[in-house]
Image (cartoon, rainbow, N blue to C red; front, top):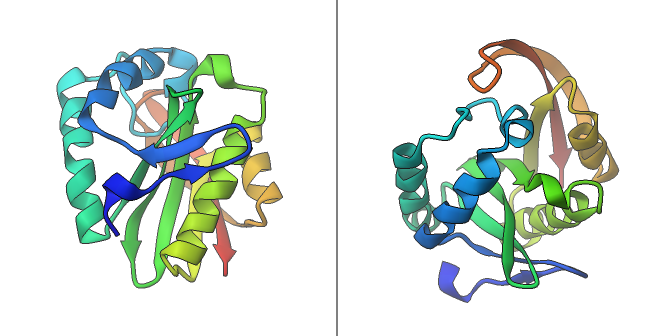
Length: 174
């Protein structure tokens, strides 16, 4: 499946494979401490070289089948990223982040729902896992609404918060 041909429409959004040019807008969004604090490996401010390098690897990851990274777009405007990564042996992990201006409008649930469908139906994965900070009730609610079940709490180091945090882990089985 060529990433160039993939478009995943929802009621209001279109998910499309990320491209290197998306890094400019991604840097804007990730520069918001409220966004970055919910991403365990994010730095505040974001590291432009690391993020540029990360976006440059997305097409190769897609070709290898190890990760599928999507720009979340609203009226052709990049408002966030959702992805399936660490794909191996029928399982992948999902993640998502949105511009703070897009919070509270249901876009996270809408994008994650379509991403899950892509993973299970189009990729044929048998399970998906996800994690969110224990204090990120919105993200946990999205996962629960999508049918994920809580696995466990784990302690991880959050680069964005500069401290160890509790992360809730979830799983969805096809």
